[in-house]
Image (cartoon, rainbow, N blue to C red; front, side, top):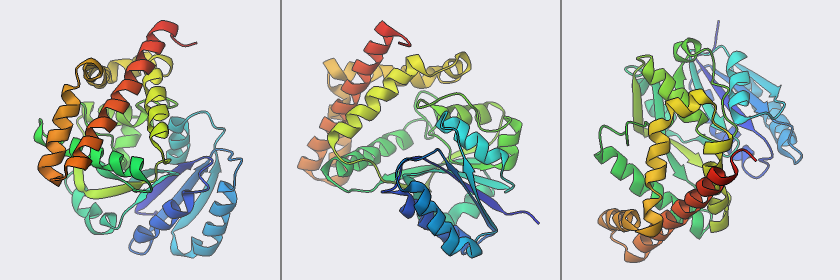
Length: 304
């Protein structure tokens, strides 16, 4: 016998969030034969002890539980390790700060009946003003994406986290290509190019526990922009050409905040709250400015 689904969690130094992510997998473990694979990247905090305590308490609810050691090369590599050691017909990738909502229990089988890989909807847990605003920004962005070209923007699909095993076998495992830029979109784009059926599902939802504070979003997107120059191999650059173009077109917003105004208008049309709409537009500007400076620095200094 083999498990129906393998849940692969890649984590490192996530002591504040990993407990919530692990517990979220119980929603599927109580309904299906679930293989839980945790790829631990050599954490220096209490992440590993939290994982050990959880697996000792709840391992009887899973088909099997494995804790793998990752040398810490990259998130892509950690996911690849997890997949190569998995057996499930369905593979779900989570991170140490990203978990399942109960929607997976109710809609996963139905969505997979007609699709080979699925991009779930992300919901950011509002732990402070910054995370709350970013979640509203994601909500606004989703509304714009769904309105444009069958859930794609510049023919760039949202990143998939759910795969049928045959998809990953066809692309020879999870692509080992990136430390912090576009690894999930590379895997998604590769699968779509090979003719597999993809869907952006608003019924399947993942929760994400971001680091609080506006500064954390600045640092994250600044580093993300640097990754365009320092992290993409030639294959990744080719596959994500449209995505990189779309991100760079957002640089226009730094000088002419047209997109911020657009997001404010879309947000107000949905939320009917002027203050929140203004905050969404400012968050959009903050992210685009961080991406612009990171991209500019990467262009000047390259891989240094």
